[in-house]
Length: 258
Image 1: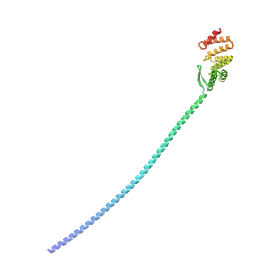
Image 2: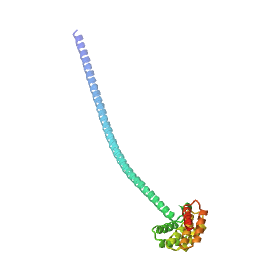
Image 3: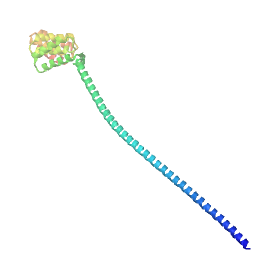
Image 4: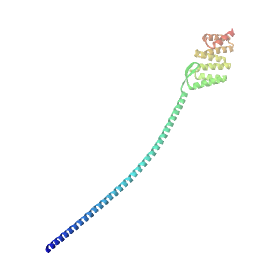
């Protein structure tokens, strides 16, 4: 019995020793596993932190690059705005220059046209007759008529005689002969006046001044004491131009001469 108890105790001690050794073995494994786990966790954390640092650094670099790109873009936009403003200013100046050139061209063309017009024949209507006259012709006739209207009859005689000589085919010629004859009549040059009045009638018997020219011939004849010739001229006037204003005075003078 005692031996049995001793055996039991010995076996129990062995079992306990074995159990204690197993427990001790299990604790070491657990600690080792925990340490491994902690190491893996720590390594993961460090790796994650490094990744985060790398991502942050990359993000910062990308942000810096983006900011530089935005700054470059802003500078480019500002440069383009400046260039556009410059171009707009140049376009406005060019438009003003073009407008000025067009104005100068227009003024030049108008000036040239005016100058050419001074040398081009012009249509003239005078005393019921329409004809074409050179600018110099118009100027000389109007100048001569102005002298007559100032009652400068001697001078008018000269300028109208010069006009008739210079422009023998002028449309102004009948009127020039009429005023020349009147200037000569006013200065007492009756014979030459008759010559010019008859030249008017020969050239343009249907002229507006023709009846007055016939009456003026009669007046010159009266001044020259050629009453017979004056009477004949007055009769011819009444017969040729019965409806004219000159026919009335012609009838009165005929009545006084009988």
